[in-house]
Amino acid sequence: MKRNQPSLYAQVKTLLWHKVPVADRRRERGHGHEEPGMLKAVTVKAGPGFPHAVQALQIKRQVRDLCEGRWRTVTVYAVTSVPLWQATPAELAGWIRSHWSIENRLHWVRDVTFGEDHCQVRTANAPRVMAGLRNLVVGVLRRSGSGNLAQTIRYLGRDATRVLPVLGFT
Image (cartoon, rainbow, N blue to C red):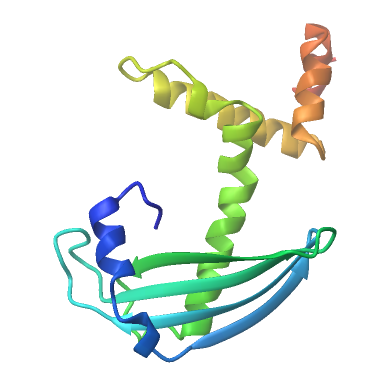
């Protein structure tokens, strides 16, 4: 949950997390970072911010850039309609990590490579159409084997005829 839902964020953040025991611990290393982390889960009553919530989660990660060596703490809050008996905290943590991988593989590319957050298209269905076109480009380029999408887009943008082989036309 991000701060774009301020009332729900405030409700979840103010829970008595210091009294909740740690339900899952992980230590991950990769992409130039070391990240030990923990997840806490607590049963909650559904409220106006999220009417189907049955659990609130706090994910706290210590992130260290291996080059710089400095540590920083990242705390993320989430709510779920999945009851404790249906998924263990470790499973919930895995689902959250897989969601972050989607965020990193698609949304980050749309935000950074295509500058979606700065797009001025706001009329009628145009934002959805543009998002669909961006998703299409990402999918086509990934299927073509492109490793670095930004570099590939720059390369293709220099000459319109370069796009045809990527689309299967020769």
